[in-house]
Length: 85
Image 1 (tube, helix red, strand yellow):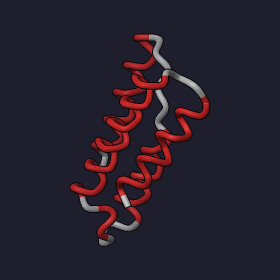
Image 2 (cartoon, rainbow, N blue to C red):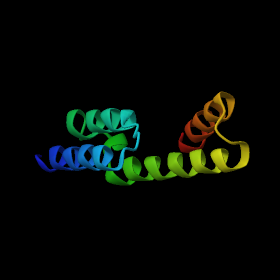
Image 3 (cartoon, helix red, strand yellow):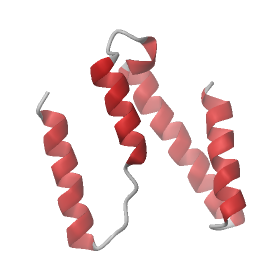
Image 4 (cartoon, helix red, strand yellow):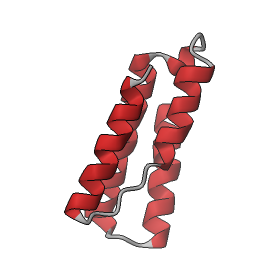
C-alpha cells in the first residue's frame, strides 16, 4: 500500500522540477474508491484506469477543437461523465 505514496511523491518532484502545474484532484477520488471501497465494481482497475483514459482523451479532444475556454472545459467534463456512465 506504500507504492501509491511513492507515486504521489514522484509526481510532486516532477511537478516542481519542470515548473508545470498539475491538477491531481481526480486522484483523490480514485484513492478513495481503491482503498476505502476496494470490493466495489467502481474500484476495479479496468474501471479506474479506463475512466482516467477516457476522461483524458475527451479533455484533449475538446481542448484541441475549442481551445482553453471555461465553457469548453465544462463541456469536456460533462461529455466525459456521459461517456463513462
